[in-house]
Image 1 (cartoon, rainbow, N blue to C red):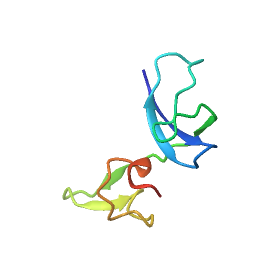
Image 2: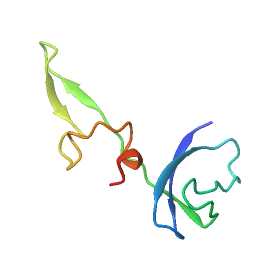
Image 3: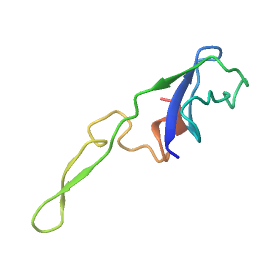
Length: 77
């Protein structure tokens, strides 16, 4: 049961949804619309050096590097 990210064509909001079936069309939690598109999720990772220090971060290079939301859809960017 993967969590997918969607974009609502009616209200232009992005949101996440737990999907139980591949043919399921989720409802937008903001406007309750069903005109949604699945969007590509950004992957995040940390590379550690020999001493355990972080040497590279995929999310740190973005404009949301200091964001405290649990996902990009959570902060609205």
